[in-house]
Amino acid sequence: GARVTNSRANFLTFSLPNVDADALFMHMLKRGIVLRHTKNYVGLNGRWFRIAVKSDDIWATCLQEMTDYVQHDSSISPR
Image 1 (tube, rainbow, N blue to C red):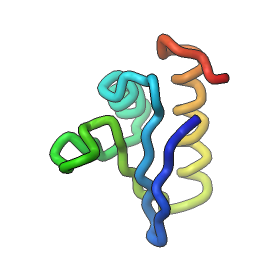
Image 2 (image 1 turned 30 degrees about the vertical axis):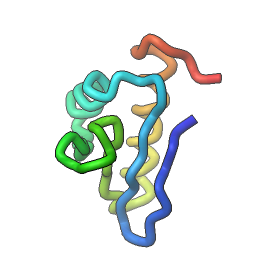
Image 3 (image 1 turned 30 degrees about the horizontal axis):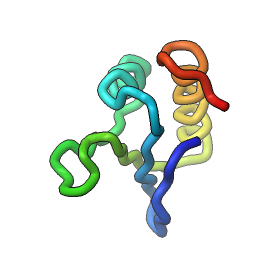
């Protein structure tokens, strides 16, 4: 499962354990979804992402693309 920080703003910070962060970043970018990586954030070591959630539709699209990646394109399968 995903790890998500508690946020009171319109963005989420999350990680997907056992998923290649760079590969996920590129997968999402190719689909027009821009994740903000955390390679320059102390303590987040580049394995966490941040995304602005501006509408329910945008979030639904993002969630579907991440699910598709984990189920079909990554080297892991969800439990």
